[in-house]
Length: 287
Image 1 (cartoon, rainbow, N blue to C red):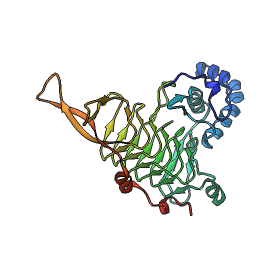
Image 2 (cartoon, rainbow, N blue to C red):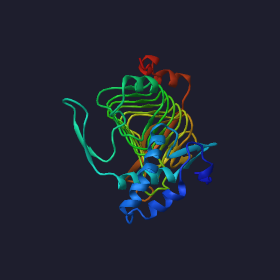
Image 3 (cartoon, rainbow, N blue to C red):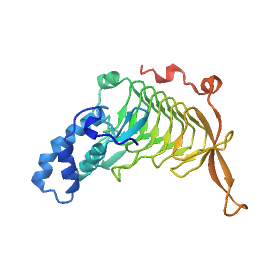
C-alpha cells in the first residue's frame, strides 16, 4: 500500500498522538486515564459507525491503512466490560463489549440510512453500511465498511476492518476476512462491482479489484497463486480488474505426482457475464 501521512487522509479528525500514546501504554492506563480517554474513543467510534472514519482509504489507485482507527477499536476493548444485551422477546442474548449497531434504531433511523436488514443479520456497532445495502442473515464486524447497493447474502461474513465497495454481491456463505492486529496489517479490500461466489473465502489482505468475479468456492490468501490461463502470468495477493476466477490446481514443482491448490483466471468479464450477475433493483430498494 502507498505510504501516506495519516494526517492527510480524508474523513473525520482523530487525536492520533493521544491514541498512539494510549495504545502504547494500554496495559498500564490508570482508571483516571481510562475515564479521560473514553469520550475520545466513543467519538471516534461514532464517526467510524457513520462512515466518517475508515480502517483503510482509497488513495489514487491504491489503499492506505489508517492505523489510528485500528488502535481506536482495540482501545475500546480495553475500556469496556462485557455486558448482557437482549434483542427483544425470544431473541438471542449476547454478552459482549461491543453493542450491536441497531440496538436503539427506530423506523426513522432505518429510513435515513436507506438499508434493508433481514432478521438474523448481525452488525456490530462501528461497521458502516452504505445506502441501498442489503443484509440477509449474515455477520458484519466492527470496523468493516460496506459500500452502497451491496448485498451481503445469507451466512456471509464481513470481518473486522474489511473494505467492501459499491454494488458488490457477497454470496451465500462467503467469508471476507478481517484483521485488527498487527495494526499496520492490510485488510481485505473488495473493490466496486465485485461478485464473490458462494462459500468463497478471501483473507490475509488480498485485494479484489473492480469488476472481478470469483466463482463458487474460490479460496484466496496472500500466497495463493492466481494464474491467468491465457498468458500464464501468476498474481499473488491481488485479483486483476474484471478477472473471472475459478478454483483450480497446478502440478507441484517438487513432486509432480501431487497437485496444489491454485485459483485460475479463465476470462475477463464482459456484458454477458454482468447480465448473469446483476441483482434486480427491487432487492436493494429500502422500501
